[in-house]
Length: 209
Image 1 (cartoon, helix red, strand yellow):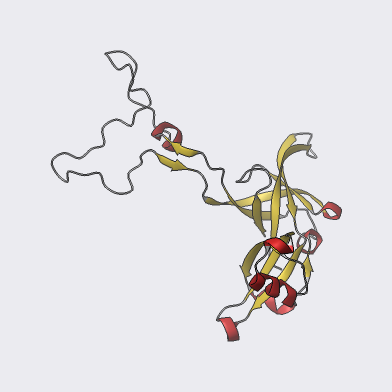
Image 2: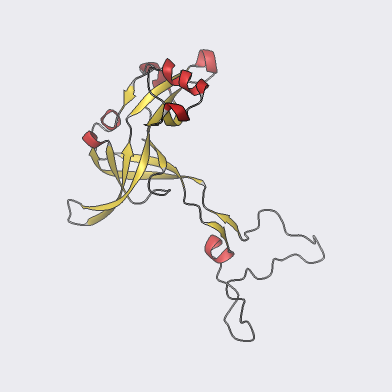
């Protein structure tokens, strides 16, 4: 079966069987609707497109309205393709829920992909973990969080591309591998995974087995 599109609800904690308090992230995963099926013969690869989260018709373009109508479903906000051979098992308009993916929550592990929180333009200490330039003695009153010397002399007379410098931080696509599923609440489409996942509360995530 494919993965699921979901939404990060926030964090909580649950007590495990050994009495330890486990920090968890709550994900509302699905229900997702099959809106397109890719095949080797037509598209050159096998995949299924899933859609999630309701959207008003007045905020949907005419081509996309037709796309959703073909799958006999209402407009959705988020669409994701999952490449695999399971496309043969599904039909347009099929709904995929948490219980379809996680029939047994014991020993279930998932990979979660999301967009990390954007932190704007940051310096080298926060962005790359630099230690700054020495102490504050010997006249260094404003060098504590500075990057220090950038290297090059008369040759090559420039800074090489890719050097760790200040710049935009966050807002990247991040995939966290092998998160343990602590609990599944199918009636509310919720999954509790151990640890943290990228993104702010309410942001979209992709959950894959």
